[in-house]
Length: 75
Image 1 (spheres, rainbow, N blue to C red):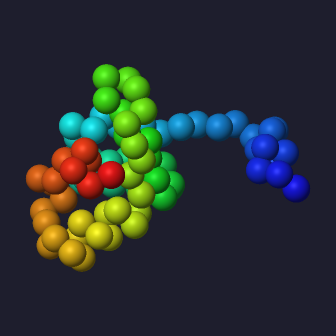
Image 2: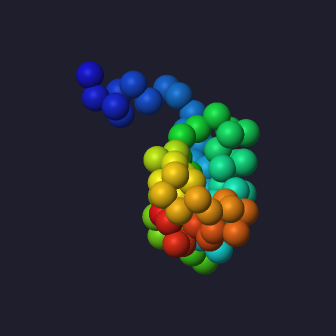
Image 3: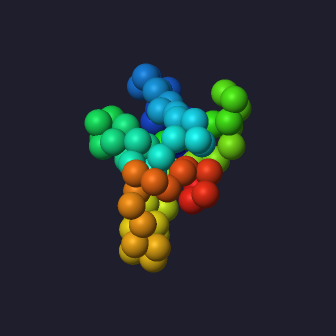
């Protein structure tokens, strides 16, 4: 079975955030929506994706304050 067949009768909502926002802001949106990734945009156009794995790399590797890290530097 193909993914398109599984999703054909389900509503699809894409969650997005501007790349100038912080990792903390993106994480809060992801938690609220119960998703593991978020589309990152620049002036309304796709510029990347931010995932739970990206978050873990920021926290584990950089020991950064996620409120001060911009998405565009880690997506």
